[in-house]
Image (cartoon, rainbow, N blue to C red; front, side, top):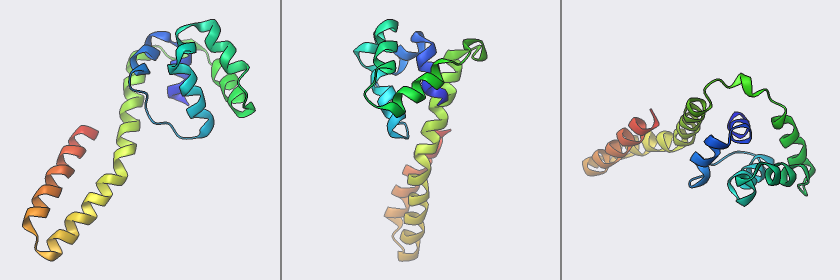
Length: 131
């Protein structure tokens, strides 16, 4: 929700995710993100209208909840967006890192040194990028 609030309240940060929107959980959140990065997201009036009159009531409710936030709660929206996107990336990488650990263990048990080296390299690369 923090990501959506930042995108709703600060058009400057909205532009930063338009080209490559992040994955968000929940159908209502995904619907709001689609509006934010779509053509309506370039015009504040069109954006508000699209969300307030969205065909899905859960989207209308969530948008209303997010729009009433005090922009003063977000002193550094660009930094907050970067932090939020990084946390989302780390969270998204966790399942693959767990899977890689399991695959490394299995390759070690089989004695497959090539697979161990390849999997460890991928693990280290992903862990480094995740922070």
